[in-house]
Image 1 (cartoon, rainbow, N blue to C red):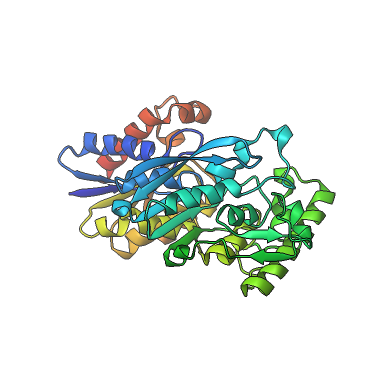
Image 2 (cartoon, helix red, strand yellow):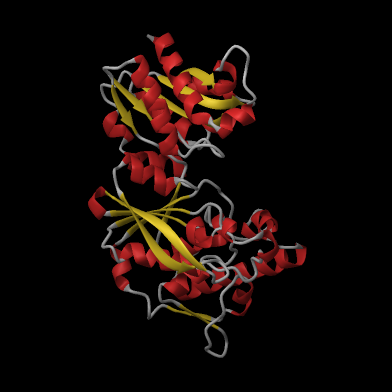
Length: 378
């Protein structure tokens, strides 16, 4: 009897692999003879590297790169498929959490370190790269990334632009002669769960700039600078990126990845679940257990547990979902094939638990909840 355990992270408490381990312990308590397969999953943002390396028994590596304001950072990446596929997260090199709130400045912040990270992964000899781009501190349209990979971004006097989104207002020409054409052999897939265009009222600067430290004047300046970047990309590289859904992701890094690396922007949860090996383990399974910290209507749309449930349902395998709590719209999960939803707050001891206390020490309660739920299903 095979049980697949494929949870997302329980944010603020457990990583996806830690949650999988806790649930698997509960399954083994209830079904000592079961074959339990742990496949932690993610949506393409924070935790993608950890989930895929754990699920696919890959390896971790680190690269010394520049952070968003040029501070030294050790950025983690993963290798799976025998080293053929690299997994990276933009946030590990150019993320908002790498800068204290008082230093945040999207006019100067750069994706240069993310480019260095991509270069380090590429030099491992990979043929495919999966990139999660959530949590950026930047608004430079991937310009810093391009500079790290050998592109020159030049002003009217032929001088290299300094890093940061504001400098793009002076962009006159893109020189691609220093870019290694070997990159053309790599397949770059980008987990992107937003549809924002590069510029305008729904673009990178207006929607995400304020949370990165941009005031109204800086928002307008950055939006104009990204528009200039898109114009020069179209003229010099022959790619129209401004209106691509997702171009505005990660401060416009979505557009930059398409323009400079010919990347494909795809929904994050399907991309990560595809790479996790979940589909290969599914046939012949008795039960799938997934979960996340809070389950609500958004779980159905674009979240990894919803993607797991959809695939299990298509294969005729029932799904149990474990969560810390429920939010509005959680009932829609039944349409995805979720047979049972159990929350830690509801399924705890008769005296009840405070949810915040549960989430600080969710591992033992998650194990107990999994064991109780599986026994009930039996």
